[in-house]
Amino acid sequence: SVTLGAGRLTAGGDGASTGFSGTIAGTGGLSKAGAGTLTLSGASTYSGPTTVAGGTLFIAAAPALSAASDYTVAAGALLQIKDMLGTVTAGSIAGSGRIEIAPGTVLAAGASNASSSFSGEIASAGALRKVGTGTLTLSGNSSYSGGTTIAGGAISISKESRLGDVAGALTLDGGVLQVTDTVLSGLSRAIVLGAGGGGFDIVEAGHVLTLAQSFSGSGALAKLGAGTLTLSGAHSYSGATSVAGGVLRAGAAGAFSGASAVTVAAGATLDLAGLSQTIGSLAGAGTVTLGAGALSAGANDGSTSFSGAITGAGSLTKLGAGTLTLTGSSSYSGPTTVAGGALIVNGALASSSVQVGSGATLGGSGAIAGAVTVASGGTLSAGNSPGTLTLGSLTLNAGSNTVFELNNPGVVGGPGNDHIIVNGAGGNLQLG
Image 1 (cartoon, rainbow, N blue to C red):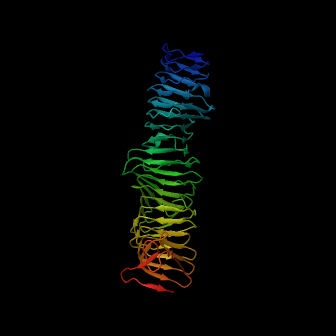
Image 2 (cartoon, helix red, strand yellow):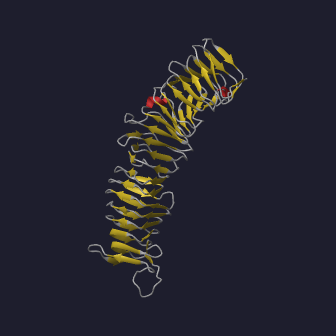
Image 3 (cartoon, helix red, strand yellow):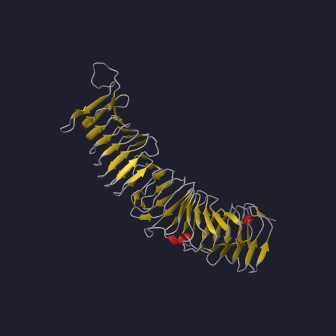
């Protein structure tokens, strides 16, 4: 065994090829020098850095790669990992040399949570797995074909070739793919959204990344960064969708998952681009841009609140048994349909008319400038225990319901009574 303590061991300076099957421990580091090959097959637990400055460091057994060590491979040097080892773990990888991951082996990099950059080539038929909270920046062209999994932190790229051969799938299972620069417009490889979910961080505000792949399963999807992510595949994943920054845009009708709860953060945008979409629910404080598209929200029966703005010429349909509360000011001009559950308007709908279907409810203490029509079996319930709802005009068809909370006799409205005001230009109250 070799006990490094806090020291650093440099091996291979004579250029000879040697093997070591013992253990290497301690807080110190290891440097591989010279043109020869150093083969490690014992257990390595040392936590200091490993530098492959020359020749080859060959990992012949899974325990021989130290999960506590940060590995740097210099230009002209090689870190070579044997085949059929399963998962081998490194603290991080960096440098400008070459890493070969043989078939049947997965290199898990990032266990030390350090962020690092590797500009060399990753080759052979093995796989790369990013773990830990740091960011691994890949800036060299690679040819490995076993695929890439981001299970923690992020991998940052500017070109698809950084992820190896396109035969290798990209799996997001707890981590994020960060895209820098404005060169990469799409990915041609398969993309898998794992149970741990994942996201895309499009850094540049003017950059658009378009994905034609389809995502399924229970994982969540996050859109990060100032740029735009366009989804043009058919998605059915049931995890949440978070638009934390920039724009998440539809590239086809039905591109957004009807099973996903969507949250749009302040400053971010969900863009239908004129294409009709169904989502599980809508929440957040950002912007929804309809264009001429129709947004149907509430398919998952959840209750949510949205304080942002909905714009465009398109329409909104409230589905499901839950409640959607709108507290922002929206200017979309297409119709609003309450087909199920409740729509509570505590903000303003400046241009939309509202149709309330049988079994559905319209309520709130905001303002609706357009005409409101309540069908037989539908309910108009003004206020928020209590409150005033202002409408452009109101039609209550035969069989419709109105619900009022009245606490102060002899008073119109006020703090104790629900109140409906119909005051639009030419506004009318029509009773069926």
